[in-house]
Image (tube, rainbow, N blue to C red; front, top):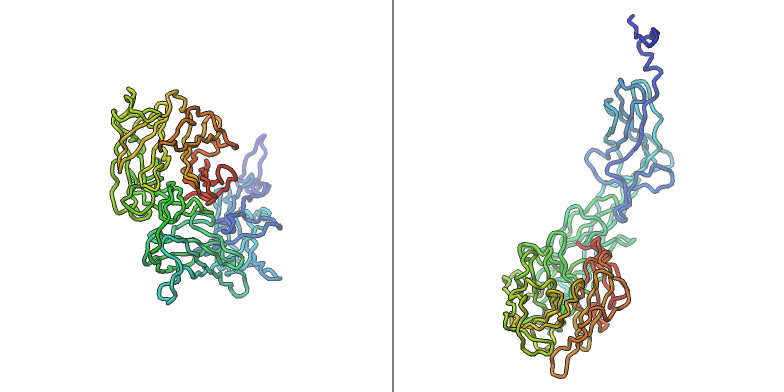
Length: 552
């Protein structure tokens, strides 16, 4: 027999070191994916006796279980893990699965637990195995299994299904209620996780892979598994609403396509400055993560857009970063806003998007909107004056542009624009699709450091300008009434520090502030904001903030 020589001349028989070595270790038992509840987004492995076990959905080969194993002091012998799964659905638990991983180096090990039953609840643990030595098992972790996708159906009395024989009671351009019903089949001897939420999309938009409950374009299921969604078909004719159910285990149903007819509305439309899609309500226009321009009603209770203008139609192939103005139009089409747009990196050019199809801008190319020339300047009293030496003959000097509104209503015109140029305010007046005159409103150069907001007219037709002082977060409001001669009175804009209103609107809290007009129909314009984490917040006037949720 050979021997192993130790320090100071001692010898030991082979295996003596291993026999006295510390046991292997095991830690971090986890299931993959992590069990949870799709309705709330809460996940966890429930490795105690008090946490309600989450759900796992359908997967190929069964759920994956993992743990981290260590060798103790014996680093020569490979180490693995033994996973044991017990069915705890009924009063008497029983072993449902047991399997060992192939011994190897210490670290993360995994195994798939096969043969588990739909609707059953399970407890499981892992212990390290190294030769003939075992660690103590981990604490029991828990999960429940739902292997059956839910089902979904859709109905609406506002827009009945095509072929049903029922007549629509609403028109294209109006919001309809669609009733969604879903079931999550309960397997024999087990339980179902229950319908968590629904994803929906009105064509041409489609359902998205990887959506989560709470994302834009989803609605939570009620206790009975049903839900109502509000959808506004922009176009008359046949429309298709796609809906997909998700249960708490993350299983999704087959998409349900609900085809319905939206008739053309024969009634004359109200004219509302700020309205892009023709429903008589002002709209908030913001890009989504993909660069599409979302049209969100200023009266909305969520961030779900009523429609979106594809990114490809934006200047440079995206709406991201574009400066988009709207509050009025020419008389060439129905009374809905045209868009005035500046492209990032090209501030000298102003594009005009004519709105001939209630928010669908795909039919026409944008036009270039002229800037007044260097001989078209006027003073605060509307008298002709020489333009300043730094006056540009394009839009490049305007650090900001906002659409104040149309002071000549009911005559249809593009809005008066207000710009900050070299620290001063200028007003630009339109003629058709061009701007032909420029009025210098201030000469003190004190408007640097303010974000302009144009709230539009109140119920009496009075215009105003708001401004956020970036350094302090103070919001200022300035009246812009009409004078007896019909011209606008801009004298309130002489001092930007005047007219402070209650509240704090810091750049850190609200990087973006805007107003599209009167969103809550109380006769006064309302503020809206986008937070640093891309939540849309609406206000009543500039008080009572309401978080509508995450923007798409």
